[in-house]
Image (cartoon, rainbow, N blue to C red; front, side, top):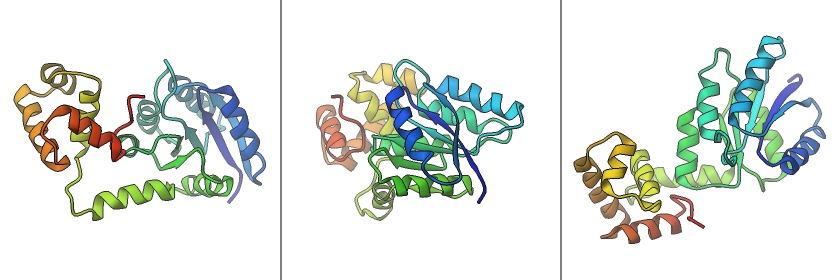
Length: 216
C-alpha cells in the first residue's frame, strides 16, 4: 500500500497534535489537513479533491462542541462524489453512537484509548475499503445479534435518547416526525424489551447497558 493521506477532525487541538504525532510515526501515513469540527472537515475534503490531492481516510471524532458533529459530517462527506472512507475515533461506545455512525456511512469505529498499532491497522483497513471495528465495538454489535433478549431498534434507541433529555410524547413525536400514537407504541415495545414499566426505569437501564450515554 502506498501513501495514506489522512484528514484529522477533532475539536481539541491537543488531541489533534497527539494524533498527528502518533500517525506520522507510521511509515506511509501523512496527515495532510486538520479540522476542528464537521463543517470544516467537509470543506477540507472538497478543497483537497479540487487540488487533485484527495484525502484517503478521514479520522473523525463524534462530539465536537458547538460545531457540526461527527455523524452529520460523516453523512455529508459520504454524499460527495468520490467520498473518502470515514473512520470514527471517539471515546463513546454506546449502541446509540455506534449505530448512528454506521448508518451515516462510517467505514469503521475505533476508541481513542486503543493501542497505536490497532489504530494504524484500522486506518489501513479503511483506506483499503474494508471495515475496521474496535474489538469492544465489534463485541457490542455481535452481542446485539447473538443476545436472545430482543435488542432495541435504531429508532427505539433514538427515542430513548430523547426520553433522557426530558422530552414528552408530543415533543418526541414532533422531533421524529411521527404521531403521538406511534411514540406510545414504541414506548410499549421499549419497556417490554428493557423489562421496565416507566420512563425513568427505561432511561436507567439504557444507560447501565450502555445503549445510550449517561447524562453526566
